[in-house]
Length: 162
Image 1 (cartoon, helix red, strand yellow):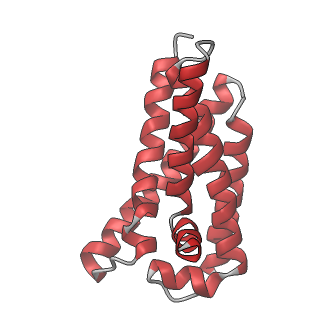
Image 2: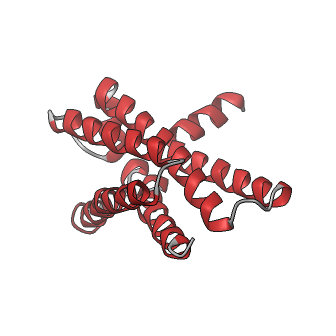
């Protein structure tokens, strides 16, 4: 059972970190009123599924490209290294945006939204044209590509007057 739990977590790492972020937001809201819901949600979603998740995706694409490509329904190619570097860059920016200025956070949201919603469009295309419903293409990774940027946009709008 433990092995299955670890395998599930690694296969859905971004989603697992998203759940952890939500738990931390709830705990922060329960035990402190110094931080708004939008601030807490922005911070934890940026740090965990986008920051740590981006670094994890970098490691998987860079060092385990055959495995990673198979989970997405791809053949391995040199493109994996380019995807790894993009994940590293956006993951590091997200880590830095955890407690950054409004301008830096806004830049993070714009960049990560372009990157992940572009990925989501690619996943949808693969689902529609290639019937690719592998876990890495149509599973939780796809939904995190859609949901995380949307949450950050909403948080930035709510935080604009603060």
